[in-house]
Image (cartoon, rainbow, N blue to C red; front, side):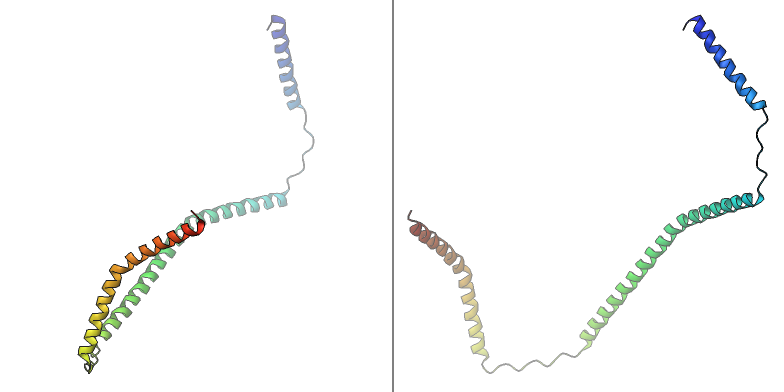
Length: 153
């Protein structure tokens, strides 16, 4: 920046400051008289905003406490339900243990024959247990052979 440009800049800045100073010394236009009703309304709005802010802060503090109390109440209710259920279960078990045993049934007339039939059935089941996998494998092999013959391979 040259000396001439710097001087011009300083001059403009000085004029601007003087102009602002002159504007401050001028008489300002008439201002509306103080409105007491408007002021009271603004004050009431401000008080209401403060009250609502305080209410919001109180609720923010209150909600976690209410939630904790509700969770505690839920926990207590579940504990009481569980205890009542266990008490009913114990009572049923005690009643069942205290109940007299029914009389033993009389032995069947053909006890020996029934025992022989049960032994025979058990032996057949054991045979099936060993023979069934073998039979299944033979069936798979046979099915594969039939498929191969039908496909012409």
